[in-house]
Image (cartoon, rainbow, N blue to C red):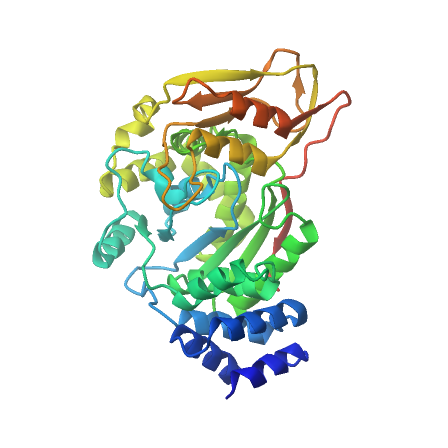
Length: 435
């Protein structure tokens, strides 16, 4: 096969065969296909798209380009959850112990964050002593015993996707539904999940700002998952404003603890119950989402979700006393309030800009070499649709620096008020079970 012929074929709108896609990914990973030809192909895909079979073939070719995690030694159906990201997205910290408490094994492979706040691992490392550097055998033992464990990402998982993503990033082909969907799903499938629940964000703080684009991506990923033998469901949820009230690593751990107690923010709690219900159904621990929801609510109410979180932390070296004593989490030296300049209703909270303000405090990484300050961040005092009086606090800023004027200015630009009452956006737009 000549790469130029395959580029021409896709450029002219024809489908690539399974064998052609496997050949392309194998040769590109081996360095036999140069970047300039792969760039031409990704641009052809950007304009001409791929059908469901092509997307599934591309996903599996990238899965097979590197290591695949074998979780067969873990009892039960392993259900993974993936979020397309956002600001204040604490769902993994809640969902892991919550669904584990009702008997669903959660074998989670997570990474570190680049952007507004840290990734799941960074957040968990706000708990003193917690670590993810564990051997695979230990990881499997912990999931079998505790039903939940988290391990760092393998260095050689989907190398084709890593190379392809870096190329797309510099060739204006990131925003291609077939390429985004196959990129995300290849990592989930290589990580060994039997079934996958997707939380696809939409709105200002999301990768996909437009609801129609978010739905198209969700359906593409669900289709890929189901086509390659992984039961897959998706929820499209709002990220026009941050989820919950806390933005920052230790702050989000505290909010996760509150949520596991049944005392968390309404939006975070509702999203976790919805995603968790799908995870429980896919694991065949309940026959309907409603039955699963009741199981999860009971785990919050009877304390078993919280006890599972403590066991999870301590089993990976973490100081589980933070669950009962959150003051043992890293604490910022300074607290500042951001007073409203006028009375009104919160009409908009531009999630990604608020996230940038948190990053300026040190809560996230501007580059992969940046060092995160686990203590700092923001606490929203008001959400969209809520009334605020002049001088009342909009945000509490947790900082380890005395000068936060730039951060305040960014927040004032990002939190807009209206004289007229504004309706809060819906939290969940759609639930998708087929592509």
